[in-house]
Amino acid sequence: MNHLPSQLLQLLLLAAALLRPASAKCHIAKRGLSKDLLLIGTVLTSDGALLDSTILIQSGRIAHVGDICGLGTRGGDASVLNCTGSVVSPGFINTHEHISFATVSPFPDIGERVGHRHDWRLGTRNYTMRAVAVNGSDAAATAWGELRHLFSGTTSIIGGGMVPGLARNLDFRDGVEEGLDERVVIYDTFPLGDGLGMMRNGDCDYGPNPIDRDTAIGYHRYIGHIGEGIDVEAANEFTCLSNVTFDTTPALAGGGLSTDIIAPNVALVHALGLTPQDFDVVAARGAKIVWSPRSNMYLYGKTLNVSYLLEAGITVALGTDWLPSGSATMGREAACAASAANESFGAELPPKLLWEMATANAAVVAGFEDQLGSLEVGKLADIVVFEGGSRERGAADPFEQAIFAPQEKIELVLRGGKILLANSEVEDLVSGTCEPVAFGSSDKIACVADELGSSFKELEASLRGVYPVVLPELPPDEPTCNAAIWSL
Ligand SMILES: *[C@@H]1O[C@H](CO)[C@@H](O)[C@H](O)[C@H]1NC(C)=O
Ligand SMILES: *[C@@H]1O[C@H](CO)[C@@H](O)[C@H](O)[C@H]1NC(C)=O
Ligand SMILES: *[C@@H]1O[C@H](CO)[C@@H](O)[C@H](O)[C@H]1NC(C)=O
Ligand SMILES: *[C@@H]1O[C@H](CO)[C@@H](O)[C@H](O)[C@H]1NC(C)=O
Ligand SMILES: *[C@@H]1O[C@H](CO)[C@@H](O)[C@H](O)[C@H]1NC(C)=O
Ligand SMILES: *[C@@H]1O[C@H](CO)[C@@H](O)[C@H](O)[C@H]1NC(C)=O
Ligand SMILES: [Zn+2]
Image (cartoon, rainbow, N blue to C red; front, side, top):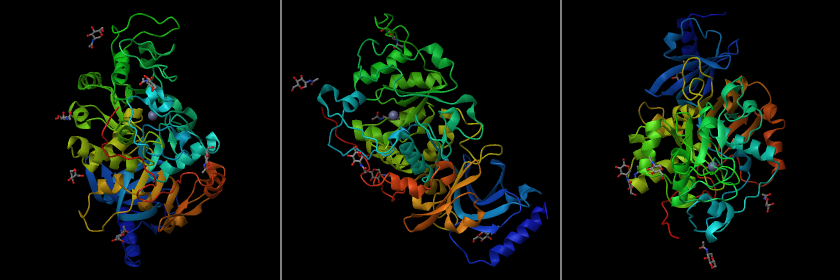
């Protein structure tokens, strides 16, 4: 029975459904002969949520999205996973991480908000230097970070580090997976070469090898930390990268010239020091912004007026920054985005908008929008299923259920159609080495050992006691997102 007509498939599915008690979770409705997978559920798209819709996955890519009738003869031999009432979303894309620091617990809040990143990084201007001690090897810490994101619905990361397998690392040729290595993101923490702590006001005498226009323009995507701070020194960084005539005197040791890299292939991480006029330049040039509100609020007591950016037409994507000052998961970053926008600017950001910042917008920022970021035919099957809050139609906003979901509510994580995490109910569908992992009261199976090179439990044991990968709804010691009073 190779290609069943879709009517017959539907009859079989109906029969199977009648024989089985109603469940609020995904369940296997049919075991197919092929490796194809048909998902049924509420499918999130930029045009809205499609109730009782289907997605056919063949060879790691999406072969059909929409009504089951549109399948025709395809999918007749697919396994069917009935997730009715659950929400099917593209995997999140985290556009800002420092993933090799994933075993460093959140910084304790000493009540200090600073003016510029060098103040906490290096203790400049009499601020407290924040120590960053990575537990475990770089590889173990990075794997740990990728697992935390995967287990919370993030399938791609731009994070300055990588391990093979697990999440896609869009800034590494060897980390993109599935042969997408042609145009990785160039991800830069110190575009001005200011890692040693240079802060300037009125000139561009930073490090000897800053980014320049000719170099940046040659990259498919250049994503750089620019203006991380709230003072004139932070604003000066943008001027040095957007105004060629600002500093035309070279520095003796090299560098020292202003340049202009602001273009559609560039995204600015943080951009906290930029003025509204600066954002007008960003908008006019088609450059993008990576927004990390929790880290902004925790370190500087302030974040972007994102409404201004959106009104100006700027594409904004979310990124968690890193565990010590940012969010442990994309869901927690979105929660902070919503509350910071409300508390600081009285702006209400709809869940669908936040979801776009974690999916389609993030794919555009990363330059992978033809492969990732939405559930469309031909794209990679990086898919996450979130448990629905209610089976009744229209009872809850499905975008809200996806973007704010705690880990416990994640029913399925696929990367390129491969099951990496699932509810234990769907165990019969997985191949490879899987192991049980409890997410709160929900029993899951993690199928990461083949890519990890050890079991999840073994890695966990080797890192004994570091900040966990499986988190409750409110992660412990989470850096504050409350609008803080800023004082010198
Ligand atoms: C999927 O499950 C729901 C609820 O359990 C059921 O009403 C529906 O008929 C099932 N659909 C298919 C195609 O099995
Ligand atoms: C730092 O503290 C020292 C000692 O109190 C003081 O002399 C100096 O001016 C301070 N520097 C800054 C930049 O505030
Ligand atoms: C660029 O810098 C020059 C020199 O400081 C200044 O005169 C000019 O106004 C700046 N241009 C913009 C667009 O800010
Ligand atoms: C934030 O941006 C919005 C939209 O441009 C604007 O109306 C509002 O005044 C801004 N708020 C602040 C505090 O700058
Ligand atoms: C926004 O903030 C106000 C005042 O703090 C609060 O009453 C309201 O519930 C918040 N709205 C949302 C959507 O969080
Ligand atoms: C992590 O490393 C720091 C510094 O070496 C150490 O003090 C701490 O105890 C370690 N934490 C764990 C959980 O191993
Ligand atoms: Zn960063």
